[in-house]
Amino acid sequence: MDNTLAGKEVRCILDARDELGESIVWCAEEGALYRVDILAPAIHRLDTATGAVRSWPMPAPIGSLGLREGGGAVVALKNGFHFFDFEGGSLTFIVDPEPDRPDNRLNDGKVGPDGRFWAGSMDDRADKEAVAALYRLDVDGSCHKMADGLIVSNGLAWSPDGLTLYHSDTRLCFIHAYDYDMVGGSLGQRRLIAEPTDAIGRPDGAAVDVEGCYWSSGISAGRINRFRPDGTLDGWIEMPVPAPTMCCFGGPDLKTLYITTKRVGLSAEVLAAYPQSGGVFSVDVGIEGVPVSRFKG
Image 1 (cartoon, rainbow, N blue to C red):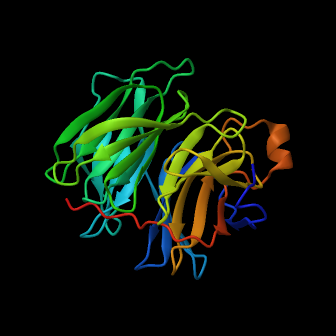
Image 2: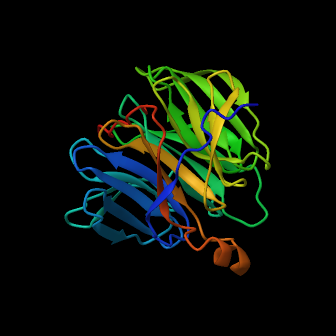
C-alpha cells in the first residue's frame, strides 16, 4: 500500500532520556507540552518557544495526566487518582479504583470532550494476565469501571464530534471504537477497528485528527500509524528511535505531532545505536488534530 505520510521529517526537540515517557498533552495557552515519565516518576513541562523545562517528582509511578479547567492536573498514580497543584506541588487523593489489585498500576489516560477523565490499568508483572480495566472519573470524584478483562489498557482518544471513543490494548493488540454518550458518559456498541501486529506496531498511546483518523504509537515497530475510522491503515511515520509511546497534536495550528518515547527495556546495543531513545520528538504532519479537553472537576 502507499504510505501517505512517507518522507515526513521527525525532529528530536528534547533529548529527555525518559525511562518511559508517556501522556504528552499540549497546553495552547502556555505553548507548552506536559508529559510524564512513568518509571522515573515525574511530570515534566517543556516550553516549546524557549526550551525551558520544569519538573515535578511524583511519589509513585504515574501513568497519565489531564489538565484541569481551573488549573493544575488530574493524575493517575499507581495508588489511584489525585489532583495535582503545579504551584504548590501538592497531591490531593481522589479515589483508588483497584485497591484489590495490588499488582496493577494505572496507565494511559485522557480527558474526554465532556470533561471527564478516563484511564485504564495494566498488569505490572512480567508475566501479564487479563486483570486490568478501564475507568471513568467523573467531575464529582466518583469512579466507574467501564471495561474489564484487559492486560495493558491504552490508546484513549475521541472522534472530532465526541461521539466515538477509541481504546486499545497493547498486549491484546486490538483497537476498539465505542459509541460514546457525552451526556451520561456511557459506552454503547463496541466495534473492532484494527488488530495491529508486532511488525507494524502494537498499539500504545494515540490521538485523533479532524478527519477522524486515529494515530497510534506503534511501540514494537518504531513508527506512528494512521488508521482511518474504518480501520484501514492510511499511512505511517518512521521514527528515528525504536519505541514511540504516545502522541498528541499541538502547535499554533494543531498540525504538529509530538511524540514521547522510552528507554526502559532496550538493550545496551540498541541504546548505543539510538541514543535519543526516551526523547521528545515532533513532526509537521500538515493535518490538524482534535484538541484535548480539560477536566471540569
